[in-house]
Each structure stands twice: as C-alpha cells, then as structure tokens.
Image (spheres, rainbow, N blue to C red):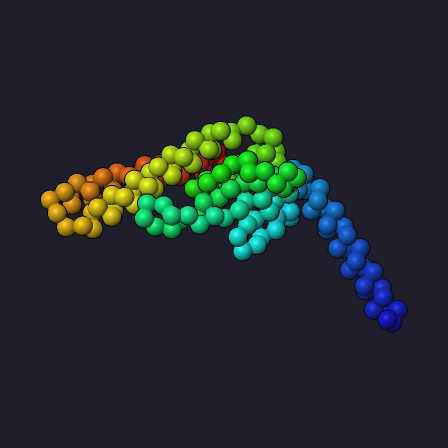
Length: 159
C-alpha cells in the first residue's frame, strides 16, 4: 500500500472508530438506537441483547396467525408466550432492557387485542354466511374491529 493510500486508510479507520464510540455512547441514552445496534434478525426470530422473540405460526379463529414468544437467551426460558402483536413483544423487551415498569399493562392490552381479533374474525366469518342473522354479525364485526383498534392504540401509547 502506498503512503498516500495508507494515510487515507488511517484517517478512515480513525473516523470509523470515533463514530462507533459516539454511537455506543448515544445508545446508552436512546433505547431505540440500542435495539437497532444489538438486534439480530432471522427468518423466525429477532434477537435483541439478552432476549429473543420467536415467531410462532398457530391456528387462530379458523386462520393461521403469527404469535410471539419472548425467550431470555441466558436461560433459554420462555418468559412471555403467545403475544398477539410484535409491537407488544418488542415493547416488553425494551422495558426489560431499561428496567421501566409497564410490562403487565402491555400483556393485558395485548390480551385485549387478541380477544378482539378473535371476535372480529369470528363475526366476519358469520357475516359471510347467508341467513337472517347476517346483519347482526356485520354489526358485531364492526364493533369488534373498533375494540381491536382501541386495544392496539393502548399498546402503542405505552411503548
């Protein structure tokens, strides 16, 4: 390598080291940056620091749905199982990482979401079947969708 190329290489190497150090420092104050820097994405899981979110496909209300299990990687123990939303799983992992309260609230709101989703899908199935109660099923599906939206908003406000 020529002197000129070596000098340029040295400058770039020092810039990368400095930028990396700045990012590491910033990540101690910004959980989203920390998550972005430490996550590892695979086909059926996402690993963030000491937690892995496994994606599990299950039968749900006559359809297939993705659910999310949170596993503590140091013990390989499932600490949260069958969460309905990825947002909930990631929010719980962030709360573990920061030590902030609210994990139980997220679980409860995720359960509300899960129940409303089941109700929505069930009423939509009934609404597609001809019969005297089709209008009732459509109305119930509409109300269930509203509950679904409300539950998701509760989760998103807690993230």
